[in-house]
Picture 1 (tube, rainbow, N blue to C red):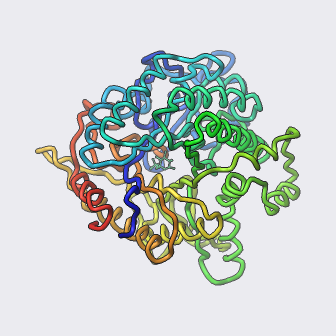
Picture 2: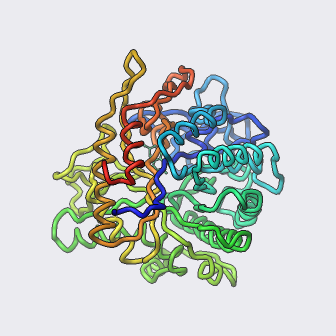
Picture 3: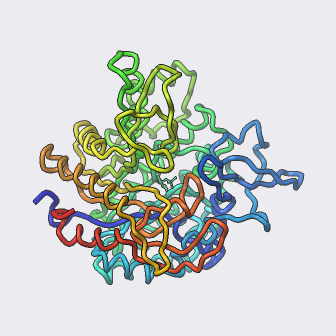
Length: 488
Ligand code: BG6
């Protein structure tokens, strides 16, 4: 048998894409509340207010510096549709969603806590109703024998911290985050054992994800230094509060292959891959690697550190490595090579592989390669906490959804994980396919791009009553879990 008997089969979502209830239960505003829907190649926009009261909109992934003054505040406009306000309404459907997970036989559910539901403006005030909501969610999960796996921060933050502190540019964020982390570690001490500090730490940027108005390398690396220190201190704190806690990092892992064996292409791929390994080196090995220090020198990037920061980073390394894997990419120094979309970046097109409807390369073998690359370097338990195919599922008149393409995608990736375990001996803890219940896409803000085993009747024009339907893949995945991945 490939996978351990206690292998954590499950699924994953995040608060800003699944939860909704944005003004309910005492929740404060979060950055993603001011982000509109978008579409394929149509950017999502942040709506903001200038100091003089005038309104502006700016694409999520652009740097806001130079386009809007720093002293702007995210704002919600009445005539605008914001998908995260309701998302797919886990807030009101959590019992139904968890029952469906129970029916599939989930052993775990990866979800995130909305920071502004716990600390409405991000500072030192706690919203009891928010804490009680997650108590109810965790209790419901345990009723079905499902272990919560909690991402403490998944791509959003209290809007107040972005607007008034310039987000993670400010060192003060470390204390605010630790207050939030202490609150939830303490409250859920007996309910949650698996944690991850920051989702996809290696891609964090911009106002929505980390509250910064300036995406220059100098400012981003400074913000990331604060995030590293906050994460390391949270890990120490989480272990103090409950020594049983397993606390991991989470990285977006997209391995890059050289386009040719030309050494320049090989070096290009190596450098692309270091954009991930840098974050793993800091969080798993506990130091800033030499290649990054040299880059900082070359680029005149100076990170302001306090005396004990490096010791803190060294002392707060992770227990496991969580990562998302959707695709591989290709690196080339030739500017004329065709490019294709990817998970938050543009890479070269791989002539040997197909792509999804959103241009993401489909490469199951790349997952085996990723598992080996990571394990070779860090020798820590690994957890594939996101993987899946975004596709425009169609619901038939009788409510059925025939998504055999999703089964095929997941089957091939599970096969790759099995090979990595059986043939290569990697240490794999679990697998949580992304968006197990349909959610709003993070990149495009669409409902059209669906990942789930469960279809949610919610559409991009804001219609839909949020009813849930089991797709064909629901029954397939249930069987996969029942046979512990032996029959896929
Ligand atoms: C990961 C994120 O980058 O990819 C998720 O952690 C996101 O939040 C997922 O939803 C898929 O991306 P998208 O753009 O298809 O939603």
